[in-house]
Image (cartoon, rainbow, N blue to C red; front, top):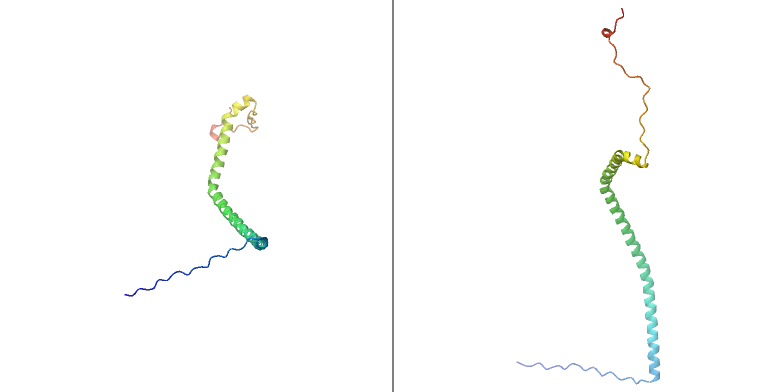
Length: 139
């Protein structure tokens, strides 16, 4: 059994210390300003592109929401139509019953007029037709 030789990791050179003087400080500041300016331009451009994309997506979402709302509204109206008819019929019956039961009270309180009595008919009373055998004979 032979041993493999050990490999030692390659050593990275130690970073060279940059002397801090006014010239290097000025150049570093200019580089940072230039880099910040280019990043700002790219960000503003991306925001402009994203705004148009966001507007289109918002329009699509609003359109889809409108379609869903219309569909749900139609379903609700379809389900409520029979109930609405029953409620309207009940309301009419309840109103008529109220009027008939409470009309004397409302008249006494002066909140309603007294119901008019039907006018007597001008027609003569109907009499039973006379038969030939039932006539009185005059002598």
